[in-house]
Each structure stands twice: as structure tokens, then as C-alpha cells.
Amino acid sequence: MKATEVLNDLKRRFPNEPEYLQAVEEVLSTIEDAYNEHPEFDRYNLIERLCIPDRIFSFRVSWVDDKGKVQNNMGYRIQHNNAIGPYKGGIRFHSSVNQSILKFLAFEQTFKNSLTTLAMGGGKGGSDFSPKGKSDMEIMRFCQAFIAELWRHIGPDTDVPAGDIGVGGREVGFMYGMYKKMARENTGTFTGKGIEFGGSLVRPEATGYGNVYFLLNMLATRNIDIKGKTVAISGSGNVATYTAKKLLSLGAKVVTMSDSNGTIYVPEGISEEQLDYIFKLKNIYRGRIKEFADEYGCEYFDGGRPWSVKCDIAMPSATQNELDGDDAKMLLANGCFAVSEGANMPSTREAVHEFINSKILYAPGKAANAGGVSVSGLEMAQNSQKLVWTAEEVDSKLKRIMSDIHTQCVKYGKNEDGYTNYVKGANVAGFMKVAKAMMGQGIL
Ligand code: NDP
Image (cartoon, rainbow, N blue to C red; front, side, top):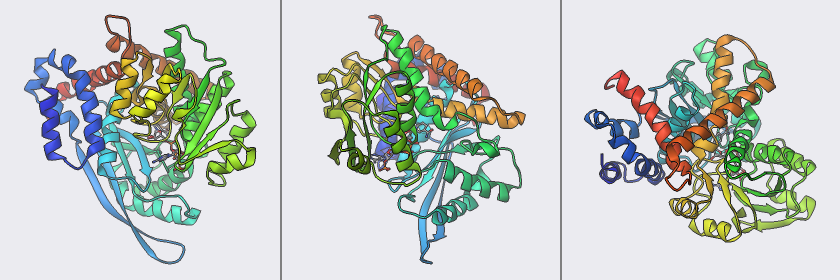
């Protein structure tokens, strides 16, 4: 396999899908050598079958807003690969959603889920519907209309969706309720459900906590203590807030958070009370991060990102391509020595290049943010057993999984000079398991 040839062919066939091509390029460039050590992979044209999703559903979602006007959005589900388990991956509601973004997310999800050590394939779905500014009733009507189409393609052993940007506990609840009504079963399709109806304890916290656990594993390889370290976080949603919460409990200083309008900067570190304010602002009042700056009188970068501030560690936790090459240079110049990604593909190609060339600790999202889907896997296990595990049990399993992912990354990513390239490590480890599972099951 020649990575450039495969990529050029995909570029020709899918010319309008830049995010998808970006994600594929990163994986192909790191797995090429490992792939070519197995000539049998090429005989079965494994790489092309792994890059192109098994199937894509796309559909119109029509719903009625509070003014009685009919609105139409697009809905999608990408079932990327189910070689090691049912398709599994979140649903994103955001005005930017299109097929390219969901294809990149489903592709990444396949390797991430493989890394978790659990039996889950990769998928992703969503809509260009934006929950921002919508009433609860509008969101409910939209979720029901979305599931009225999607329900026939998902199920506990075929495809298990969850949340993502714009889809939290409220949206998952509405979608799961409709799914149950249509499918006439109660087996837990969907993870991230309310704890009263099959959700797992620690699922809301899992992506943020898991990212911090992964970071601790990386820091341990250089004997660095998290206590007292300054951390810049982007985003103020699910992943960002629970990342901040865990960091605060470990004595680190979180100096930034953001949303799509701007960034708050608190040089002395956000307090627990202030974090609580952000949590309520975002989840109950659905406000903007600027309101935090107005309330506490801190600095606010209107339209700006967090990456220009002085910090030891950066944890991008908002969205894809939110940290570019110039941002990376700025972080490095300011002394940043670790980057652990809560979001999916938040760093551009150029930024990744900067981080790896400077040999800082750099964890790509597919390893560092795998805690969310891991606890989703644990939620599926609890639903199958009809049992509920304690928060301590789930948290200790999460810690173990993040540590196992770290071990796999080091195993496949350690260079001769001792530097661990976590991008290569995560890609090769994730790829090998899926590839062997595909080989074992024939050409499908
Ligand atoms: P939320 O919707 O809870 O929060 C998203 C945050 O990112 C908000 O602060 C939002 O600001 C900001 N944001 C979204 N789009 C943009 C944009 N284009 N530019 C700048 N800021 C933006 O989502 P999550 O916290 O769940 O997800 C965040 C990231 O983590 C995503 O990349 C997601 O794929 C990834 N992830 C999430 C997992 C989970 O369990 N939830 C699991 C693994 C990965 P605003 O309010 O202004 O839109």
C-alpha cells in the first residue's frame, strides 16, 4: 500500500470532503509501515474497505417550530465499520454538520473504539439543526422527527448512538424515548441516557475525566506532577467542564474556557464556585461565556481562542481544527509542554506537526478523549446485564481503560530515541485490531 496513492484516489472520489480527507491522511501516513508488514492486508484491499464507510443514511427531517412554521433539516448516520462490535458513536447537532464532518468523525471513532479494548465498531450521526436558541418543545419535536426516520437503522446489537456537540442528556432522553416507542423494546439503544432509565453513573464526566487520566499517564513518563500546573482549556460544554472539574480537584490551575464567541482568561485560576457558575450558565440558562466575564470582571477575548496565554498544558475541548499552526507555535513559545485533546481533531495538520517536531507530550483525541465512549461501552454492558454499577466501579474501570490505551500508544508509538509519538501509537494500535478482525471475517 502506498498511502499517497490511496489518498489521491479518495481525493478524486470525494473531492468535497476536506475534514474526512484530513483524518484519513493522518491515519494513513502513520500506519503505512505497519500495514506493509502484512502483505495479506493488501491482497484483500483492506485499506480501501477500512477508509470507506460501510453505509451512509441521509434523510430530511421536517418539524414544526413554536410559531407553527415547518422547518427542514438534514439528518445523517454514518455506519463506518462493525468488524469488532456494533456501530457506536455520537450524534452531533450543529449548524456546521455535513457529510464530510460526520465521515471524519465516524472514521476516527472506529480506531478510538478499537483502542478502548471493548467490543465496539465505529459510527457517527447528526444534523445541521442547531439547538441554540430553540425552546425545549422545539428540541423535543426535532429529536422525535429525527428518530422517526433513524430508528429502523439502529438497535442494541447493530448501532448504538450517544451524544456529541449539541446533544447532551436532554436530547439523548428525547431521542431514546421516541426510539423506544417506535421499536417497542427497552434494551438501551443509546448511551448517555438519564440515570433513572439505564444511563451509567460517570458517563457525563467520562470524556473530561478520561482525558485528565490520560494526561496523568503521559506526565508520569516524565515524572511531572499535575499539581500547580497552568492549563488552558477551550470550550465550555460537557468535555471542557468535566476536564476542568477533575483538574481543579488535582490542584491544577485552569486559566481559560471559551465558546464560539470568545474566551475568558482568569490568570489566578478558575475557582470551583466559578466553574459551577459556568456549568449552570451553559446547561441551565444556555447563556454565553461572555456573561462569566461580565459577572466576575475577568479578561474576555472577543472572538478569540485561548492559545495565546501562558500555560504549561493545553486541552482543546471544543471542536475540530480549532488550534492551527500559528496557535501551536504560540503555545510552544510560551512554554507549553503537553497537549491532550478532549475534542476530535482539534489541531490542524500544521499544529500536529509543530507538536511532534518539538517532542512535547502530545495526545491525539482518538486516544485522550476515548473515556467517553469507553463508559458508553460500560453503559451497554450494564444494560445487557440489567445491572447498575457504582460510580466508584465505573470510575476505576475508566482509569484502567485510559491506562491501557496509554500503554498501547507507547507500545506502537515509541521511537528509537525514546520519544513517544502518540499519534502513530494510537493509529497503529487501533488499526491492527480492526484489520485483524476484518481479515478474520472475509470480504463483506
Ligand atoms: P458541547 O456541545 O457540550 O460543547 C461544545 C463546546 O464547544 C461549546 O462550548 C461550544 O460553544 C464550543 N464550540 C462548538 N463549536 C464550536 C466552533 N465551531 N468554534 C468554537 N467553539 C465551538 O459538546 P461536547 O463537549 O460534548 O464536545 C466537545 C468536543 O469533544 C467535540 O469535538 C466532540 O466531538 C468531542 N467529544 C465529545 C465526547 C462526549 O462524550 N461528549 C466524547 C469524545 C469526544 P458554543 O456553545 O458557542 O457552540
